[in-house]
Length: 114
Length: 450
Image 1 (cartoon, chains in turn brown, blue):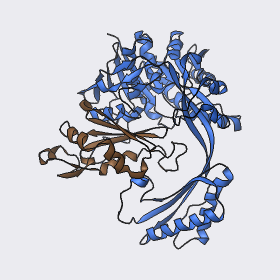
Image 2 (cartoon, rainbow over the protein chains, first blue to last red):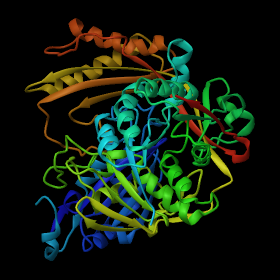
Image 3 (tube, rainbow over the protein chains, first blue to last red):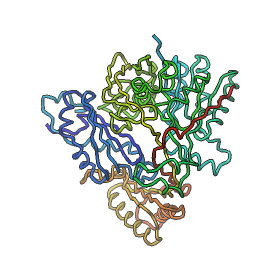
Image 4 (cartoon, each protein chain N blue to C red):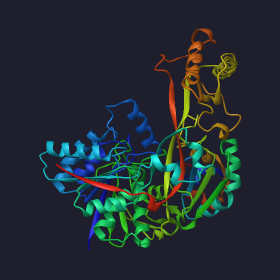
């Protein structure tokens, strides 16, 4: 089945200067490997389109089921200079909730919000 | 076995006060720690102090916070660590002694830790702006304030001198929470194993309720009990730096694996190398275990020797932002919003708006995610047209609001608007980062007694 990331992982974003870090943490141990395989740094950056101006690095911490994406140039020059209403990019992590993943049917009972 | 109980009193300047009072009165705390500074806090305080001689230069909620927590802290003997000193730790410390006397608590030692401000010599002590690689000397004309991030050591020294309350200027946020661990357990500043654990725990605590259910609930996906009544976190630390994160019974929210995991990575880049003044933290070895309701045991956070430099924040006056919005609703809201955008763009040409960047958003459609917004969305019923421009002078920034004013009677059909308020501009205090050799920054401690 094909589902949005919001059913597979929870997200949060943080700001430092003009860099936003956006984490995606799988809801279960079984869901984590497919999240790690399908949500690469390249796909993440592409999904955000022009909203991320710089490179994206991905750090994986497997035993916490967590991916941390560090996106440079994502905050309009930094909190105080940004013309975006969400100066801190606190809501920026929410965009990736719409990223679609392939999930085997046998894991359907581990998906949230369905 | 000695075990420390350290509570959070605030995670930022605007945080709620009531949960701090609850922690002070019912937390059975050894220490209560307050974090109240953002990246631009010091620079903004400097700008305000220049214009407003009555501004004391410390946390504007100092009185509220201290009045709320001092009775409970005095009764229990809870010590307080706080960075509410901003640009005037001495003034803040003296103000705290005032409130102590009001409560009849005499002879309490309050320390002020200063030394982080290096504005007068920052251009001599630093070379490169970390964000863009340019020399820091390029900031000479716009420089407002520069401060180094101090570590836990001056707080530990103040505690050693008998302070029961320590008020600081800029100190790295997690260091505020680690200082009590170093002091009470006798951890050596070179013990990077224990300091790594302590700073890692401080990192989990410094954002307060973000580890107890704040910045977390998402209905149907991640629910939280009583999200209107969140408790601030409490940590129980053992001498080896292992700990349990919890919160007061009867408060809303929760402490569980999900809340703790999210906070581990909050504002962290490489999780194996989280740089702080005291130690380099490695979060990748962290072990978490739910050992009871709202109790998560945290062990295994790694530490590596600290770097020879301290981070410096350099605040600069970089101009102004003008900003305003107006509204459309009902069938056809989007087509009217699009014409309004076109009118504004033409008007900005006519009045010669000199801006570094202009942004016109359709709030309700694409204002928050910008280019990351999916295409071909259904048309929203309501749209706010929100316009912002970054300019060198206030006179240019004012033009944004003035052109929005013009949309009232010279605009298009069915334009909703707010009552004009203020001049709809604000100053930009941009923050840049650099590094300074740590031996070039000397802290100082003054002790006041109530």
